[in-house]
Every structure is written in structure tokens, then in C-alpha cells.
Length: 146
Image (cartoon, rainbow, N blue to C red; front, side):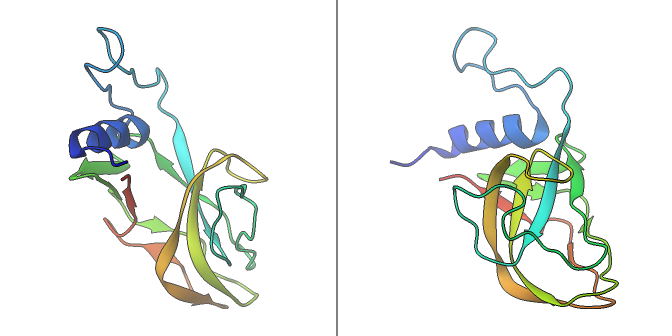
């Protein structure tokens, strides 16, 4: 089964931009949240799995923290079935430790176990050690539905 581009864009806009998705369900469609909130983007040292939490295999280099991204058009853009980050997502620079990041995670909480919503493999593994600042450039974090 595959979703149409119209449906993919509508769902991605609802989820990432907090935009209403008209003509789905009742007359008002699927409504965005009254308070949009944020997603927390994290890094992982292993491939993700559907049973993971935000904390499963999470990066642990010294000074690591998840990064919040607003659920709005200031945080994300949706087009052609893809949600992209509208600003750089920059993690704290490593001040100690050494590890290799393999995937990203998007979830509900700034720290702790948290609900994991989405995950995906990085295009290339990222070696992190003292002085390295992991980041996703504008438009580099692509979320697709299909």
C-alpha cells in the first residue's frame, strides 16, 4: 500500500507544521494543536527500531543533549512528500567521549526515555569526539512518508 502525495503532504504538514488538514474526517478536517509544541531531535549510536524509545542507544558523548525544533513553519517545511528542517539543528559540541552516530530520532521529551515518533539512518556515520559539533544543515534532515 502506498499513500498519495496529497495525503503525505497533508499528514506531514499536520505533524511537523501544526497545519490543519482540511477535508479529512468531518467538515473541519484534522485540526492542528491549539499549542503547537516542539519535537526533540536526538542522535543514536545504532540503527533505530520501531520498538525503541528516545533513550535507546542514544548518543552519550560529554555535553550531548537533544535539540528542540518547533512544530511550525518556522521549524519545518513540507513539499513533495518531504518534511525538511527550516533552520540548522546543532547539537552541543563534544567535550569528551568518543562514539559514532548512526541514526537520528524524533520524539516527545527533552531528556529521559520519551516517546519515539520517527527515526532514520544517517546518510553516513558520524564520528564524534572532543571538539566535534554534530549538526544538520538547513534542509538536511528529510522526513518522508510512503
